[in-house]
Amino acid sequence: MTTDDPRPVSLRREGDGLRIDWADGISTFVTWRTLRKECPCATCTDERAKPPNPFRVLSAQEVAAGPPAPLKMAPVGQYAYQIAWNDGHSTGIYTLAALRKLSEPTS
Ligand SMILES: [Zn+2]
Image (cartoon, rainbow, N blue to C red; front, side, top):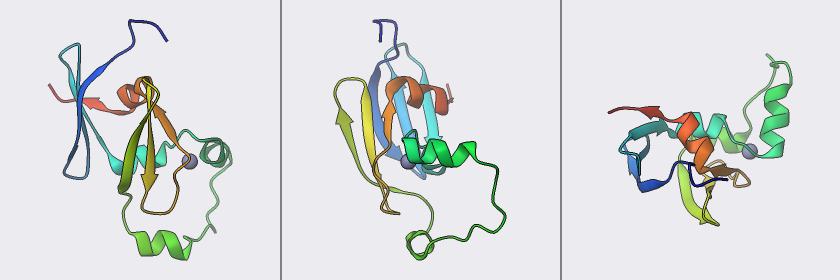
């Protein structure tokens, strides 16, 4: 991490995603669905590396949970956030750099 890394001025829930205003004046938005899909934890990273399985069925918990939504988003140190999802998954730690990469500038 260097001092050139993006710093958020504010993070807030907006509609079905996360709005981030950055210190460099850029405002970005990313949907919860994208964040959940791009979960950086080892389990999900392994899962994404495998070829798609057409016979994979959703677990009962996934079906019951509906579209991905965060239950909790907590800072981890100064450079990351841990998101606890409504499907019970909470090991993903999103660095600020990852959040910046995953979100789209809207201004
Ligand atoms: Zn994960």
